[in-house]
Every structure is written in C-alpha cells, then in structure tokens.
Image 1: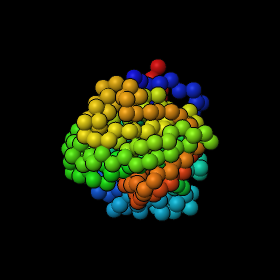
Image 2: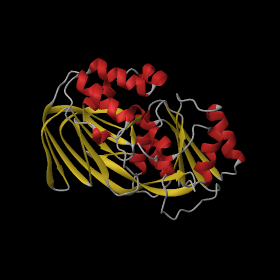
Image 3: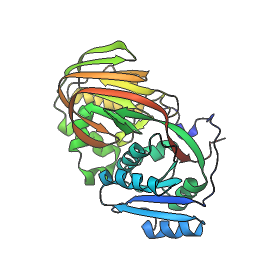
Length: 313
C-alpha cells in the first residue's frame, strides 16, 4: 500500500460543530480504551456537551437499536465506542441520516479508524469526535446491510468465522495469516461476477472481496488505490486454491501491490452482482454472517458522515 488514506489530500469542504447540543454515546461495554468509559464521560462533561445521551451494549449487534433510539432523542452527534464490528453496526443505522459519527477506537480491530487517521489515544480521539471536520464518506451495502471497511465471501468469510478472538487480539495480522494457512482447504467454486452491468469474471474462485478502504481485515493492505470518498468500491477475486497459493498471495499483499499476484484480479465499480455455484460464508467488516449463493453489492456515496482529523499538509 503506497499511501495511506489519512495521508491523501482531501478536497471536501468540512465544517466543525461545537460540542454543545445533544451528543449520544453508544458503547460496547466490554471494550477498553484509555481510562475507560468513566474517563470518556468526564471528558465529555468537561468539554461542555449540552446534553449527553448514554447507551452501553454487551454485544455489537444490539447497537443499532440504541443508535435509532438516540436519533429519536434528537442526537446531533453519535460517538461509537468499540471496534470495526461496532462501527459497522452503528454505521448501518446512521447511513443516510446525515448525523455524524465520532469513532472512539476501543476494539482489537480498528481498521476504519486507522485508515482515517483516528488514533488509539482517548483524549485525541475525543477531540476529533467533538471538533474534527465532518467528512462525508462512502459506504458499501451487501444484501441490504452497510459496511465501512470491506466485505467478502468464500475463503475470507471462512477465515473470519474460524479466527480465534484471543489470538486476533494478541497477534493482529499474523493471527489472520496463521488462521488462514491453518484452515485453508483449497475449496474453489464456480463464481460469476458482474460489475456495473458487464460480465467481469466467470470461473473457479476461492474468495471475493469488496473494499471501501485500502487496509482490510488482519491489517493486510489489499486495495492499494482505494479511497472511502471516490463513489466506488474496489472488487477483488482470488483464485488461489491451496496453502502454497495462499501463502504466495498473502505474501504479495503484505509486501507490495495485491494485483501483482497471479492469483488476484482487482477492478472498481458501483454495482456488483455475484453468483456462487454453492452457498459461501460472507462477512462484513470482520463480522461473519451466514451463507449465500448470491451477493448484491452497491456503493452508497457519502452515505456516512464521520468526524476526521485535519488533512496532512
């Protein structure tokens, strides 16, 4: 990955909102960050937040209901405490509302925050959330559910489903690669992909990925040219079929451009349709879902407003 998203020049005209008003916190209570939720509350009160609406959830899948309740309460800013899974669930509920999201990266995987340059430093993350520029960013939508970082099916979905949470927390990228090589079965399936109405791929494939940013699950730089504000999604298909193929593929992805691998094809599009000959596990932002034979993927331009750091000069 040649240049991080956070380092690229930004052409948006962004505004900074004052901290006064209705601010909602939707927090995964099992995630830790800085001095914890007590420090977060203290900092928000000190910052002069007008009215604070506070929700804690034990699992990320319970977050969307709280986000919707916060919107009903008149929230003008929603602060999300958690990792990529929590951000994805909240983004799905906030999509299209125009209410900005502030990210407080408290999870073991914070790829969306990292791609945007939001640090794992609580005081600075709070400052960005309250006073940072409000930046409209794209979302992807897979079978009706939004994602912010990436989504995938096949080998990628199996990897996410099987990866041990404690191992991921300790080792990050290495954990994913280890899990991938340990669980690889070489299962390719007939896959047909149409991009913006045209046939693009028809053959045996082991994995299909859709990226909104460059660095994906496991901290692997997969889509070198991705931007979360270009109105398109990166589309990748892998034809690697065994441990040796996947070791070569992951090595290329980690060391250079993903499309240098002979087992990878990458393009860009707005509407993608995928048909598998057999049901495949799929995932969104590192969270495994069910299985499907068909995927309907679209980009949602400017679907989510996120509080971001100032651009690097």
